[in-house]
Length: 349
Picture 1 (cartoon, rainbow, N blue to C red):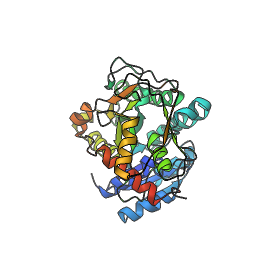
Picture 2 (cartoon, rainbow, N blue to C red):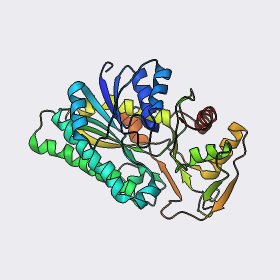
Picture 3 (cartoon, rainbow, N blue to C red):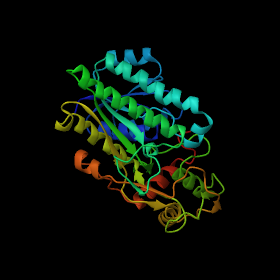
Picture 4 (cartoon, one colour):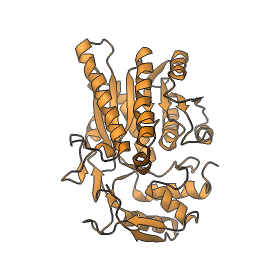
């Protein structure tokens, strides 16, 4: 496996940069394409600091076919890990066209370039937002899809495209079929244990952990907890939080699976990547205060439209077929997130 070259789209971003570290340390060569719309080139300098190895970097947009064609002609890529895309739920409701153009059209251009280069192994960064509401709080891969915002719909559309692409192989009897893993993430938090790379959101954070961290360090005044009247153990929303390093290790397991017996004839399969347990917003705050010895002032705010009371992964399929499971604890996630925030109070700036 080692010595293979992996193309990482969006590789300078939060999850992408952590994936670069794990890939390099596993012996892969890494090529990154990123338009730096939501990321900083400094993250890749830090990747080099951590690993002692450099990635090959292209500043470009996956919607630019010419850049992709050139990249595939210069490098012998075996697999693409596709992170590039916009990912803020609220923003997607305000700018749906931007989300569909970036996420869906960008993926179409990438797939065309991959097909022309005969690179047909893909690990796709999907999301638990593709699921609809369910009677069960624990979500399995066979649950019906029913995303409730443009971000989630863009991910579900891409999943449909990838399933159709894979299904076409059986009609055309392709000699080199597509091999595709759809990884549905729950809520990635934390940072690399070095404190050198982490989540560096533009402006006000959309996600809970960077918001909590920025309140704790004094960058933001207080946290808003949206709803304390849910039918949960403490009234606040419950989600499945997964350490970003555990998450990216799932991608390396997926690359191995695509090369294995289960995908010998091609295919497209979805896997949940989550811890398989839920934590409430107040439990996150309490864990943060305990681990860091910092107070996190918060206020209760009204519920947000479209938020579920409780949602966490059933990760059994990933364990069975990818030999992957989350290993890090909530305390690990909090400690690593805080180490990143306190070492880099202004992010990569």
